[in-house]
Image 1 (cartoon, helix red, strand yellow):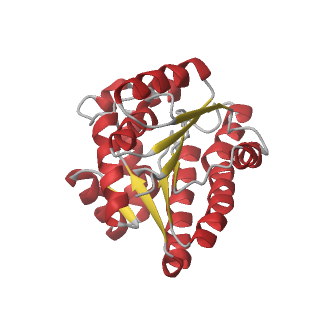
Image 2 (cartoon, one colour):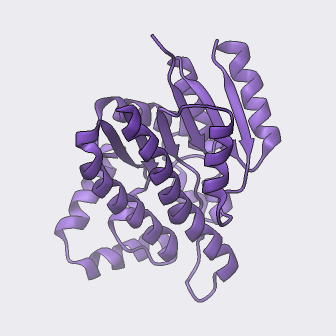
Length: 256
């Protein structure tokens, strides 16, 4: 049986890094992408020493305009066929909207939404031609409600969730399966990068747990997969409760 290839963005740390190990253990060729080349090379060396899989690395900043097209071109130049695309790269910015840096926020908007959308379109077209494929987009439980002090980040993840569910419906009859993964707080570098209080992550699952969950959700062909019982319960409650109340509760949780 021909070995499949997975492309993972944001693969130098956190969930992305752990996804690389999970897919390698399941006999996938890897294309790993992130900004920090030295981190990617270390992961490549470690995986290739443990598993008989090929690992390609690309050091790129996907928060730059046209980075998606550049990545797609690089993959095509190496004549690599991508069977699974995992749009994991993303970051958040914590703080009240009037205080956050607009340039940094714009980079987040490009990475979390624009690049994700472009990569999904570019590789989905190839998957449709091939007659099969999987696209996995990492959203968040923040996608289910407005989150004061995390306003733009939560809005980007609401986009990711809505976009993923829509194209999942469009592509299902073309044998291309789209899955939106919605983790809650997870122990990774995300909290430090977003400048979020670590108390929100004290009982959080590990990035490794989320990677295993993501792989299994993809295999099941789930459209939306929320990690953890409490996160599922909270997502349900946000859909059935008054939006103003949900926003007020989210504000108290994030800003206390």
